[in-house]
Length: 379
Ligand SMILES: Cc1cc2nc3c(=O)[nH]c(=O)nc-3n(C[C@H](O)[C@H](O)[C@H](O)COP(=O)(O)OP(=O)(O)OC[C@H]3O[C@@H](n4cnc5c(N)ncnc54)[C@H](O)[C@@H]3O)c2cc1C
Figure 1 (cartoon, rainbow, N blue to C red):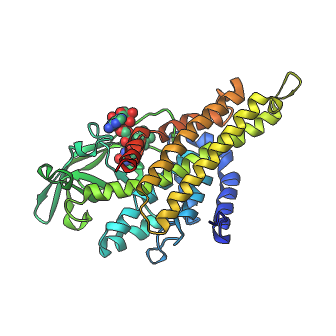
Figure 2: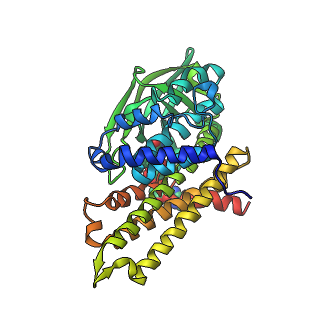
Figure 3: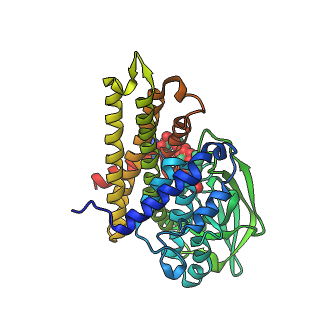
């Protein structure tokens, strides 16, 4: 077994780290607080090729492996988790499903502009009545002429207001059960498609989430992704891949919480010595370090399995479950180590704490990850 990164993977890791430290970190908290989509930084990342890393070169992507992609996501999230989720949603669930299930025409039309970052992608499955339970989807797609008419609403959709195109799951025939869902590529400005309420939320402020509303929205047959009835398969496989990206984001948050805590514990003096000298603090730091490494190993294993074409559903859920819990625990410990200062907006750990919470919820809650893992364990 070889744990070494290749020279190319190390180069990607290093260049993203330098970019985040020098060009983003000084402005991240302020930019996040605006609660606006960070177009300036997304454009910079597009220029660096960070919006199409695992997309083959023939579709204008970087042609990298999954490991390189998750290394980049960890580096981005270490500084600004919301920026990482924008990239992860855009890439893992907004672009790669088109590459996997799209016709050649769909791939040629949508993947290059997505990979180059000329437009942002998104993925919408959640509805007010359908969160963990995708089969409860109410959005309907009815056949009409040479296409489908969509009616319904999605909620909590990342990149929603800013996406150039989105992958939408809708019910084409409820009587067919799990074969009754289908997936469509819907472009911004399609008549009948509007953006609804933009949510005010606890954290991840720059990850702007909104409702998507479909009122007699006509989508041509050529925008059906993966064939009629393939919606659940497309969504589940998109989420399998997506969970590796979110897990990498969590490793970034967990590591950020640790590194900020180490720095603070060495600087902050109480009782005449740095608090890092107290064993109570050292043990916290040790546990935090273990969680970062354990989470990263799970993420790298899942990414390796995806890279090598093996099944990875269970491993992606394990990585997402463990890494999101590690991110939340490390962010909580980071606040404790920073004491009262950690509770103020003067220190980034306050933002990390708010951002970490949602990683236990989106792309499948921790309970749903346990359900996926348990199903495989007892099968
Ligand atoms: C910031 C943010 C960004 C998001 N981005 C997107 C996006 O881009 N696209 C998208 O489609 N969605 C997105 N979502 C939605 C997200 O994926 C859902 O919120 C999530 O899947 C949970 O659904 P829910 O909120 O309806 O909770 P529910 O499904 O109602 O769950 C409520 C609680 O019940 C538990 N629960 C439910 N079913 C079971 C069960 N069978 N066994 C045990 N426990 C169970 C859950 O774990 C949870 O604790 C986003 C959400 C947020 C907050």
